[in-house]
Image (tube, rainbow, N blue to C red):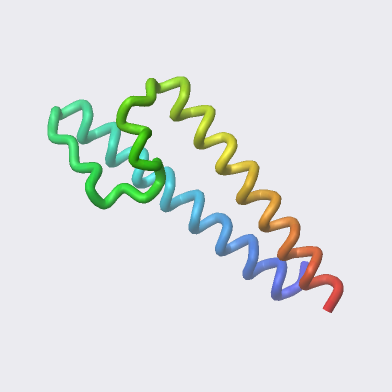
Length: 80
């Protein structure tokens, strides 16, 4: 693997970890009835009315888009 591949992978891993952290924080907030979603940039504003299944589908779709972007970036780096 090249340096650029490692950098892209590292950035992707950090992004996924950040999303997981925010999701875990949201779960904790919901479980303690102290909901603080003001700084939540994972879900769009309309997500407040989404059920759990819809949120999971949204996150999976967002992950697929991120993977496609990573693949596109990787392809561009390889071409250079």
